[in-house]
Image (cartoon, rainbow, N blue to C red; front, side):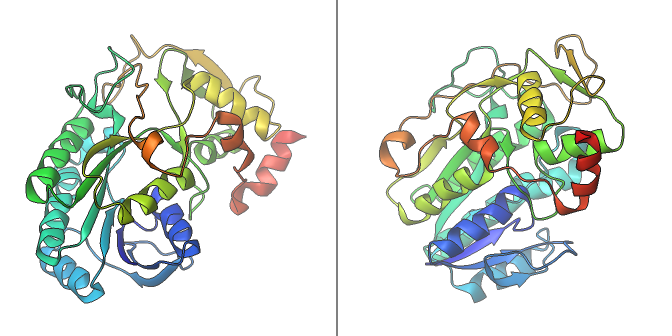
Length: 309
């Protein structure tokens, strides 16, 4: 298939490009302001401001994709609060335009949303449960779901994704990459014991998105996540153990409730993964299998060796 990918330089987008290329697909990917090495897996790499509607439309039409995959977003809730116009442009208007282009071209559309559309009080959440976003990022993502499904209802699959791990193109996007950077620079990670997430590897979710590109009969909203829920604190401990980094003085257990935050965060976002678990070849992974594939970013290798000493 010919695939058009937005957000190719991000954690999920970079992994999608690699997974799709291994499956034999030709991927045209947008990279925005990315200045690093070429993204592995892209047949064509485009530097494109995704807020420019005319340029986006021309690029998609020129690519003649069988499927459009939207991995681009302002995904940091705090940044969404600081830069609401940028967040609205990329988190709502972009997917709306991509849905219109999909409808124009008859292309499949796979749009990535978030489990944060839920408020974290009634887990586990099924695909039919009502959304109740607590912060600006989640509200925009909920709006994007409605826009995509209203514009291209017979072409679009919306996948609500969890907290992601993985090896990102720039080595700074994943949970483990940020923790290793913080520890290498002497910062303490204050991790919540009461914030529960069903963390998944980006390449595992990418494999789901690749499958959905070909499964045009699967339209509407779906959930994907890892096989087991963990707290942010437990996840940090497991990452430290994976990389043999002593945790004393580097991880502090704390509680989300009562902690001042730039954006309100839901506590328990466990997901019911049906029907995708029954319909796809890709399966959810336990935490151990995910941790086994994590690597130290090249720029941090010397620093991590010092932490291990």
